[in-house]
Image 1 (cartoon, rainbow, N blue to C red):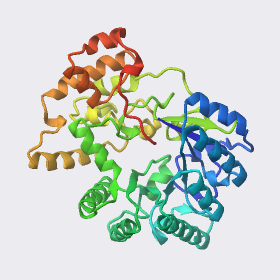
Image 2: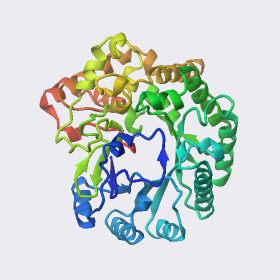
Image 3: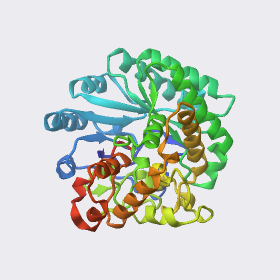
Length: 409
């Protein structure tokens, strides 16, 4: 579970053309102030620790960031931030060191590969990209290498651009970067899709090329492939949130705290431009429906990868309707097949090809019907211990008894 602290909401210093937060900006739901004490109280209620998030969190006054991080270090022993890196200055770096701030940077590549992360003019966009690249290099030199989030789109991952992007990752590994998250483009409108979305064939070519690149690298990992392999073998206690049956009305892996102290959800599920208050109880109706709904009607019925994928993130659902499976089904199904083939060739039996799959699917359906969830690894532990999953679904155990697979969004 991650607490995302958003003092300035979705306010940002750049205007990424594809940003999933644009519906909130379009509705002008950008706060003009924040309350430090209200935010602290809300983080305490959520149980912390927290990552300062945005928009762009470095728009927060430096003295207020120091107040938050000093408190976070004292209370939980560490802090976090997710930033585009453009505004990082000497004082921020000092605070990163002093308050044990784990830094995540969002960037789509060097130079022109990052042009979609627009800053108003091409000249300013390239200048801001250069600042972000310099910040990454500096943090690596100073012993606090950031993790990266890279979104793949027509600006950086078509066949003519992939070699440059891959060479950049090789250089990043040499600097000390060890973790990168590859995002497929979250399409928030037809105009965004037409301008920036890769075709299915281009997406597959890009993702499979990075799976191949990873075998050449020594220390840098793309967590999406680790997640998918772990799901295929049922070792999924630590997989990221998009694979873990998220309720869009109360996102489990992300507990948002707004500048007023209001609780909210992961912004990827926000399609209406309104930060709705987090619902008090989880529901898993989406996953029960997807399991039974034919694929031609937006469901997942009959898919042997369903228990690993679970229809993927509701924020990427077909037509923006969380009741449907992800619009990127072809990509993820293709990648699961790709990784499955590698396992079979190596003499392994992935869960997708195991007779055990039906039993585990049944366990999930029972628990989801009871408003609870678990990981594949958790289901196996319960079954290996001879415990009665049906009894749990009828009320024989608390939600806390069920293992989760929570992680950052």
